[in-house]
Image (tube, one colour):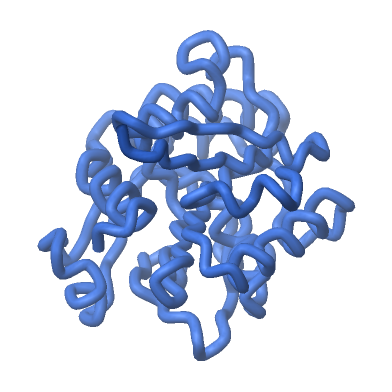
Length: 245
């Protein structure tokens, strides 16, 4: 028997009743996309102040940082603690995959700037264009030059230090994806989302008066018209996290 590989999800949001009931929470959504046989997956609800012990960190092969309703540019206690943890994981060269809020937090931890998106909310299915250099970074995957992904955010990474490589952009965001060394990767979109999760979120945002009915209706119509490239994103994310790139 080989040694069981361990991974951890740093959970940065509260689960909605819908996601809890259908998917076992966002932890269940991520495990559904990323987990493979012979692995052990744990969850730390960092937004609620639950962090891995110092002794536990070394036992994990990699970490995934989820999306959140919180602002990555805020200075809440748990956000500051998470920043410190990410800096430590970077120094340990641990594999870290950041999604949406997680992508922004990684950008901030690496010395970049994050804030409100200049163009406002980005919700729906968007085409992401990969940089020419990405064909070398992801050579083993034979990636296409563009992929569709579900987006749901009003913050973004504004800029990154020169040491960090931007590997994808869209007509809405200049930094859709970045890579630092072999161990850190951030994705602004939500490879793990299904259409029903997105549509549920759109309704929640509308009912909270965060988006207009017109915008909600437009998003729903566009979501019906196209599909995200979920399998390609799954392959990319698992290959990165498991060191197969």
